[in-house]
Image 1 (cartoon, rainbow, N blue to C red):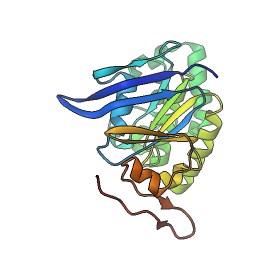
Image 2: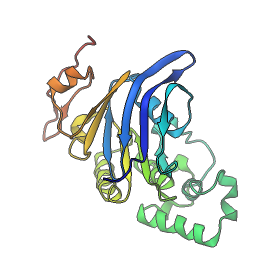
Image 3: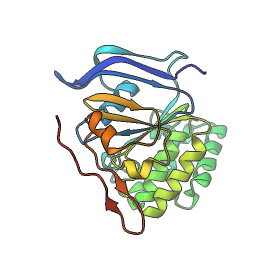
Length: 248
């Protein structure tokens, strides 16, 4: 078996003096596809920020046995300021440089990578548009292209299907299946029913983290994990098959 890309050991972290995650253990291997689920405020985004090195650790540690892997990150759409004066091409190119203002100074090979990525994402026709003119699906494609352009070993996506239509969601999931052949993926979602057929394993996060080594998860397992989320069955008439349960 290959070595893990990331190892979390007894990790406790949060904000100020408040711990959001406690005693978290997790290993992420190459080509893993982990669905991260849990209630709002349970610590899903905090987990991501810890892995990205954006918040300090209270205790425990994060190890990268082969060195810190190249990581692509797709934040929640609500965190993006669509009024910021930047074009689609500059957003994608900023995945290669620290600031979009440096975009004109990219090497010729880097500019070709940007063009190729725009073509692959179906964004070439809107490359020079400001991001404020994009649909929800187009914006997510641009942000995902930015996360991918540096050819990461680990891709982290925080609620990527928020504010997008069903067609884009289906395209996104097809894209992620292909990407998973070459990289590990952590996918945060509130909707286990949608991501269950896509991911390989599931991490339930609600202060603690419980790792489930398959993509099949039941009401009983969620109760054991104290992970109060809804399972939604998607079909001709979507219907709820699991009620939210209270903390114990």
